[in-house]
Image (cartoon, rainbow, N blue to C red):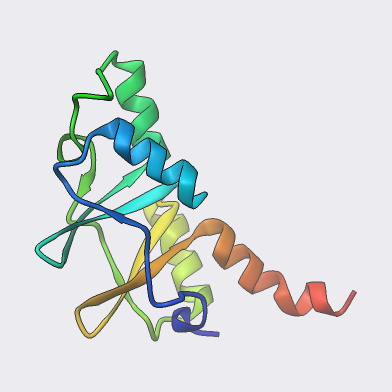
Length: 128
């Protein structure tokens, strides 16, 4: 199975100028642990729950701090034709939990470790 089968053609996004509290609210509303950071229709970063926890632990005012200062800039991406197994191996080796999937320069979505585990277990789960 390839990654394009796992992404729905959209990702939850936020702008780099948004506050961390705005990002946290958006994550809760969308029930995700990450947001793709988009500027001028281009993926410029990714913000994760871990980033929000880090900012909070450092005593940052989350209603004033902005996403751009806490996101991971220029995240690694993979093309949509990569296999689930390749993507899972890459995530493990890189230590990531979220992987932006790109097709023709456009962000299709973000796959998570959980998405990849479910995809790898799917044939086994359906046989039970």
